[in-house]
Length: 173
Image (cartoon, rainbow, N blue to C red; front, top):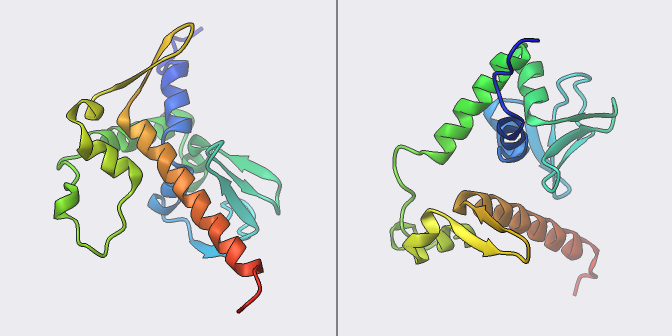
């Protein structure tokens, strides 16, 4: 049996910590916002009856009834094998987590630009830029600020989506 090139943990990170919506855009897959939902062109059936689930980090085509994780999408779009797709994603993840320039501070952002909660956390306490320790009854879990920021961005996206839905159903005054 050949030695595995990637650990289960590395593959888990690539599947779950690269936002599938951002990857779809990066791969150049046609996409749009429709009725408050992110839609993309399915790489198999070419339909737009699709969606993404930030909680599971999966993309789904309801037309051909297929779920796609980040590795699946790279394999399909780039027509590459598993190992080459994983290398591509690993490069994306490393670039995302080791940017050439640090993010601007809040004071450097234009006043009109919305600020994410994750960005505020990054600039508040220097210790947050490394690791946050969250004690639990049995173990100590370490979360990177990037992981927290990704999750907060997903929550913000869901809040915006729910707000749009509420505004669409409430009566006009």
